[in-house]
Image 1 (cartoon, rainbow, N blue to C red):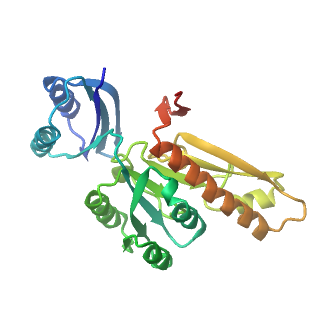
Image 2: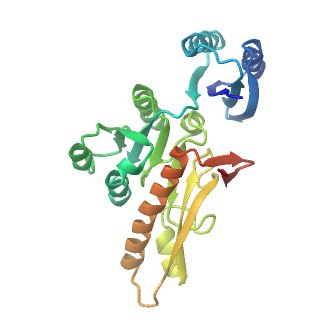
Image 3: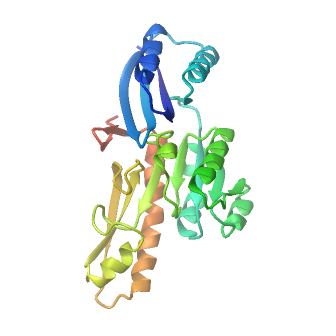
Length: 280
């Protein structure tokens, strides 16, 4: 039987009654709760509800009711509809070009549209201009202000998936919770080994014989989100640090693109913090 699946994210100041308010709303609208996840960090509350409807509701009316409830409960709420329509992609970048180059070169293979590129600086703006994709620079050093601007950008372009293409800033729970299992990052290591920004240097110093990369969904815990793909390459004893970096960064680009492609083709499912490949 055909059903409609809706994801609802709720973020705001923690207080009693929030969970009940939204779950009761779902039941009153004839919905069924498929998944629920909630977190509290330093007084910030975040909840993700995945609900389904056998009797398909009117989207505009449902959104209107959710917005009304959000105002009443003083929470920031957004909805995400699981559909087969083309998804909007946002790519977050800093200054390293290889991941962005790979995505732009193979963009037509993605079941989605690259709607906006967000940068921490202007280094990669010419690549966006050549591809005729809007490029927005967010230079604010204050994390709260920077993320407020980025949230606005993502809402403007109705973003479904965010790809961190060597984006060199940490995202806070206030941002991450709004896009559960819809932010994909690439890490220059086979996680959980060699965490942090100096993974290649650590691998070089330790004489690693195989170096890997990991694509994963982003959670509030740095580099600990559900793993999508891992790949590796052999290190020759004569390889310099620069050569290892070059090999790794090229593999990062390919691995990140593969993860994006499978996500957009709805082939990935996250259960109990693990990514499962859906059977046909």
